[in-house]
Amino acid sequence: MNSHECFLKQIQLKRQGIPSYDNYPFNLGVIKSLHKLDLHPKVTYIVGENGMGKSTLMESIAVAWGFNPEGGTINFSFSTRSTHSDLYEYIQLIKGPYRPKDGFFFRAESYYNLATNIDDLDSQDSSDRPIKESYGGKSLHEQSHGESFFSTFVHRFGGKGLYILDEPEAALSPLRQMAMLARIHELVQQNSQFIISTHSPILMAYPDSIIYNLNPDGIEMSSLEETDHYVIMKEFLNNKDKMLNQLFESEAEDE
Image (tube, rainbow, N blue to C red; front, side, top):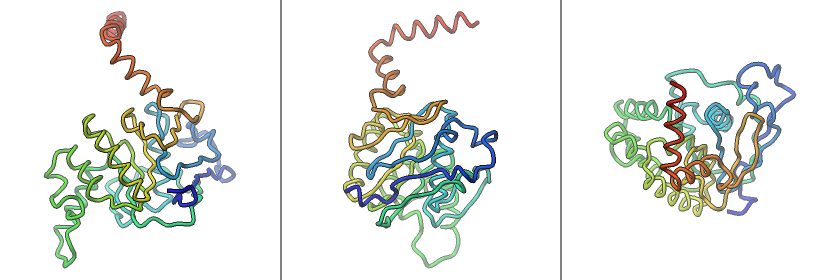
């Protein structure tokens, strides 16, 4: 995909409309420092420790685009809870000249609710094709957590799409994460664009991408090898016994 074919080129924070930075989510370091964020035409990663605002930012981008806060396509309108922030109202999306033919907001924490909504819709009398046919042919609740995740990535994502994924690795084994990386590449070759929030160094490894690292002070661009996720995982695997000893000694001192 060439840069001029980007579906979503940039997000901007409409700072002039924010009444105060004292309240959530505007008191987060990432929001306080956010002016604009350029998105890669293929894959953009949003990474960082829990509590930095990754999911809040991902949600705001997705909702500003028109996705349901709990996930799915823009055609899903179910709501099992109404706890999403109003950050999306202050997000300006700078779109490219092309429009995607497909799209999906995948949110690991509310995926169960999405699967339930699909079952509910399919249980209603209708002459339409069952929705589950687009997800591998059987209820997502009849598959394991990891299988249902991967079934969506393989069967529902059709290419030429904008896919916003919030921690898609949550139920995937390392082997399935590598298969997911291959699936991302396949869809990128079909002119798709991804925005992915993840803790997985495997999923972060797509070479033609941008990684934005969220920290208490804001946002910085990073390479895979510079991320804490990669550094800590590599250190643990290369020096397992040493790190275990340090961890257990630290625990003993705290008791």
